[in-house]
Length: 324
Ligand code: 5GP
Image (cartoon, rainbow, N blue to C red; front, side):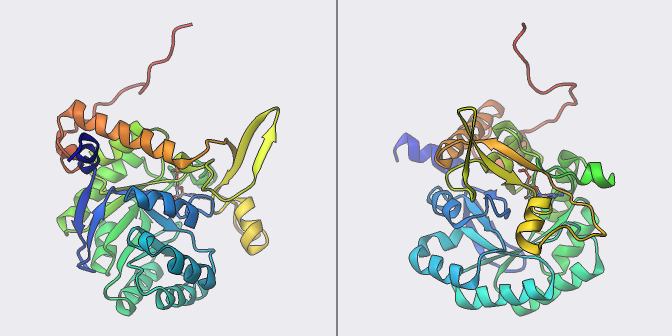
């Protein structure tokens, strides 16, 4: 082994999922299933490093077929996303049928606290007994348990922490992400389930903290936005380059896919222009470099050990700034 390969192994994890019995191996970082970041282009780069991509739900079955035929090596580390509507479910079934090598399904709703969603998870499990099912979003232990017992393998945790999410402002609903991860990891692990910490990471240190708090996977949107692999045109303003990034329930996404925000609902996502950051390879290197260094600081030989070597202390500010 070269020292690079040895270092690479360090953040690798192996999990066997509770309900699908499937064994996963890779670096447990996931590109969010937003239409800007959960792209096939992102999956091509991320899967080379064994990182995971939750592909957004707006690709057609034809797109899936073409991608699967031309990039079969990527299929090990990606999931097909679906909402809980009948149309979403029908499309998911067609994708699963068209791409037999696909192993992961990501069932994503803004609010995982409904009997309807629990029944939906049960029916997806009934139809796909061997697929690994990610389901969310929730933020408390009892709902994590309910979804795992209903057939989900990996629970997506986070309500309100997303960088382009305005749920906390529009509705007053949300849960501090670190507390949610600590609580939900405990509940999931008690049942041999797993969790994804979804949203709220703004720097590599935040990713390390999510793992330290017990997350098995960390999902990122904003940190992966603005790259070549993201959907959207480059915008040039005053000599600087930007790319558009927006919440999946923002006005922008609603207009694109359903012809506007439904009248009875407020949009719960914002639209931002993020600085263009080139190839996502550089960002991956930055995140993995940070994570390896975290492990060194706290004395964790592997990522698996990180949560056992982590103590959180309440602070008033997390970073120091230059004195001017
Ligand atoms: P980030 O890594 O940017 O902080 O968070 C990404 C996560 O934000 C996504 O995986 C998803 O859970 C959440 N998210 C994406 N779009 C929206 C939106 O429009 N509204 C809300 N409430 N959350 C969103």
